[in-house]
Image (cartoon, rainbow, N blue to C red):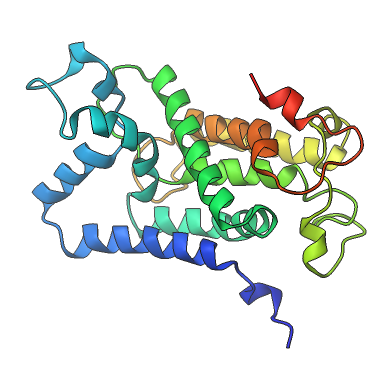
Length: 249
C-alpha cells in the first residue's frame, strides 16, 4: 500500500528531529542551570572562542577540539520549544526532499557543511562576540537552497508537470546560471533573503526567544547549500549542467 505523503518522511529526517528533541529534553529536564551553561560553553558557537584577546581565564572549555566541533554542534541546541518547533516545521519539507534525492549519508554531510558555513559567516560578521549562537536554522537554510536546485524542475516535486513517485526527486539539477532565468526560483530567493533581512535587522521574535536572529548564519548556510549541492548530488547531470565547474574553488 502506498503511504500518504504526509507520513512519508525519510527515516534520516525523523532521526535528526529525534536527536534535536532529545538534546533539548536533556537540557530542559536533566541539567541544572550551571550544567546547562557548561554545555553551551562547550558546544555552542561562540565567536570569542576564536579571539585570544577576548578569552576569560585563559580559554573556553573544550580547547582546540571545541573550536572544531562547535562549527556543527551548535546546530543541535535550541533556545526553547518554540525555537525547536519552528526549525522542525521547515526541516520536514525541505530536508525530506533533499534526503530522498541524495540519501542519508550525503544528507548528514550536507547538513554539517551548511551548518559550518553558517557558523563561518557568523564568525566573520561577529568577531570577538561573547554571545553564543545556537539552532539548526543555518543548516535548514542550506536544505532550502539545495531543494531549489531541483524542486522546481520539470517533473520535480514542485514542478508544474511533476511525477507522483520517487522519480520526481531524481530530475536533473538546474545549473546555477539557469536559476537566474526561473521566475519561481527568483521569487523564492527574493522572499527568503527579504524575510531574513527583516527578521534579523528588525529582531522580530520568530523563534520564541527574546534574542536576535543570526541572519548572517542563515545566509551562510543558504549559500553553501546552493553552491555546493552539486558535490553531494548523485543524480545524473542534465544538459548544460555546470555544478562541478562552479563549486570547485
